Amino acid sequence: MCLVACGVSSARSHSTRYYIVRHGEKSDDADDSGLKRPEGFDRARALADALAAEHIDRVFVSDRRRMQETAEPIERALHLQHEVFRKADTAGLIAKLNSVDGGNVLVVWRHSEIADVVNALLGAATDSPAEKIDPLAEWEYDKMFVVTKSVEQGKTSTHLERRRFGAESRPR
Image 1 (cartoon, rainbow, N blue to C red):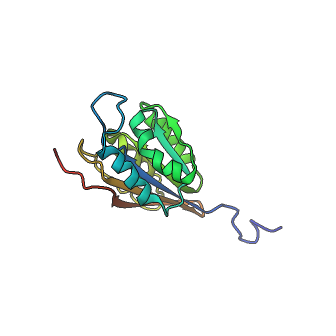
Image 2 (tube, rainbow, N blue to C red):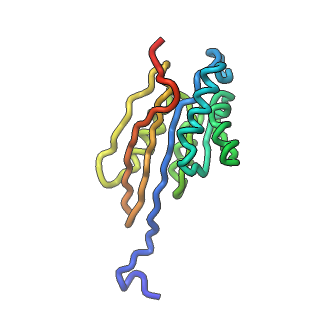
Image 3 (cartoon, rainbow, N blue to C red):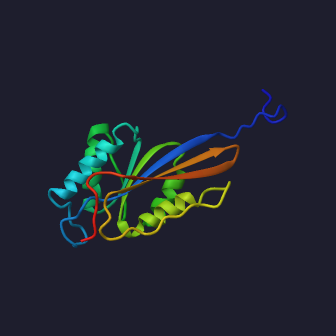
């Protein structure tokens, strides 16, 4: 079989799409509080509805209850189980996300570190300067960041799409 000499690259092309969201509205400021009723649970159902046709393959959450409760409706609908990272291990989450080789991935994380996750994924681009997002405000629950990372012929490109889901978030 002639691969290199005949000009056929053995480099594999693939695309990974990451859907990154903040957990739904929380019940209080306790570190491991659950979702607020009904707002947080409505947001979790809205997320499941928004992603119903996206063919999610994997779900990553922190070890905090509100993140897991936010992911639960989509997991139940798609018969998936989440992969858990410690709240303090955003670097570990980013390393794991960068190792995912194709498919569609949901990430439910803390608002204070969503920008770190999104910007790290966008920073993988080798074909152009990466876009960046600003940190989320405390009151922003309705934003979804979709990062598509494509690898072709050894070059990585990224694309950012901004979406909203559920009821509009407003400053308190």
